[in-house]
Image 1: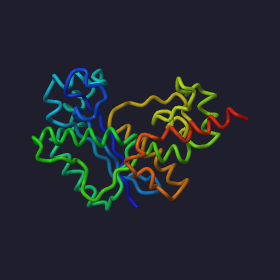
Image 2: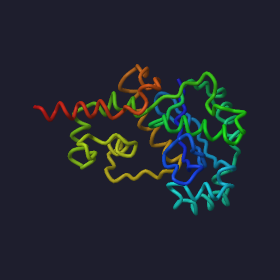
Image 3: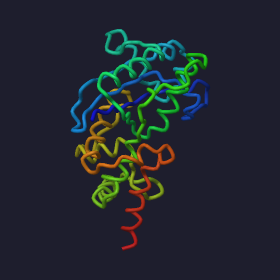
Image 4: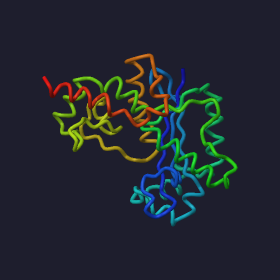
Length: 240
């Protein structure tokens, strides 16, 4: 089975919009196609022309410090520009070409809503959904929290390295998850779409080797709950 692992970088369309996905506009979209063994079959990375063309929106971006890098990549051809509608068609075509049924993202709830908001805004409401009909969006963070993250070994790793939340729970961000599976405790996430999709595909590949069921990761009601199982394991360990 082939999978898409997707990431996006977005900016709020209104000042102070923060991380509200309903006012988000994607400017950097990246994904990879991987098989169930984790082998990368295809890479895709584009900038969204409408968002890059609106400097008022781009100045709201949390990672606006990377704008210079993006402009350099645009000039060199490393980051081609596509309209939101074209990017939407591209992912449809890749899903068909590689027979992809599952599209994964780490903490996918934000990406799912933000990309829908982006394509709806730029089509004046003509298109309401960015994601291909028939494909299932899945949360890698939920699967990680049920597999690798729900182990005493992972909790001890977070404790020993100080990767704990203010509430005393092990962190389960993609950055910390990748540090654990890669053995690179100093890894820093780039927060650019394709680079993040690549590290998230590595996390997914490790998780898929742990179990067969991905049902909970496909349930929108459970998106964003990947931290709960590791937190429970941590709490159980404290009572001993």
